[in-house]
Length: 470
Image (cartoon, one colour):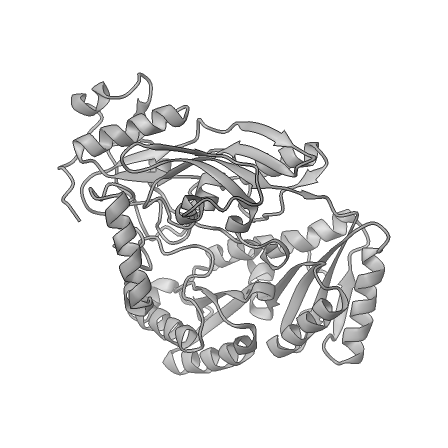
């Protein structure tokens, strides 16, 4: 990768002269933070463009001045993709001023939003028209659509609706030379050559800047039912998922696995969050969404009865109101907050084939127990095979006591995942934190193709330097 120029500062007259007035701003500390506090970004100046033309001007100026660009969305990513802790001082680019919902076509189930709009804004705009934007994240009030697409984010409804990629019909974007791609089509079918949209989605800002997107909406479900069910173990949870899919194919919206350790952390750190079931080693949070004429609560109660007869469920609570359902989801969404308060030694965002999950949980727990006295909180999106496998200090100790184990634990977990045909990066991306993992475990042919694409589109190496490919 070509060397970028020496440190930039906000008095760099050459760069400022190439940009419209008001685009460059002093860099606030909040743009250099990341949620887990393990990385601190660097940057000399902030660019806050107001439209795609100004984004293109920023990119062209940075290309001319050989200055790296670190795109910054809502800052909710967990792999240091939006902070650059070392290297030549970059420009940080924020789309905080590009938040418009440009249009919504309810009859087409399409909405066009700018990249700085939060997921909550998009969901609210869809709901105002009686529609649903199905992507759902705990950080939806902060996460921005540009970052969501750049990382191909998932969330709790992937089982029914897919990742962000599956909900995007077209993009407006700026390539590393400042070229603007205007491809905000509202089409389901458009086979006209290479799909640049899909290339940019999941590229983590290393191939260009997404500035707007046309998004797929859906009719709102007529019936929604939610339940928290206690299960004996992950194998029973997977069997329950199979029964649910067989009985209600296509209507299981979410299927979340929650460990008893996670609920214990909740009780200790967030006692104000109500837990609907007595303590259990494992539980699942299930949501069904059904069309008119199929009462969801009846369907869920039938599933519960069937599962209990099979010995897959030992206890359960079906939400009797929207408020009770919201309480159950609040419990799930606060699990990461309880984790942060405890302080993880290392967190893993992994995915596995469904048939491998139960054995992996058993085997990984046994291996880690031999490495040291640690607690594991395993939870996540069981329906699509994505687990958050987080390792914590023993009670009374802190994560700093385990600094020497952090690397070996992560390597051990990732090795076990890859050996079972899984991925060490399920929904948060590679960022800078998992560059070495990608180099070690990525398919050589795929990596070669990725490097060729990067070199072709970004020969100067200015787009999010150090992310993904290092």
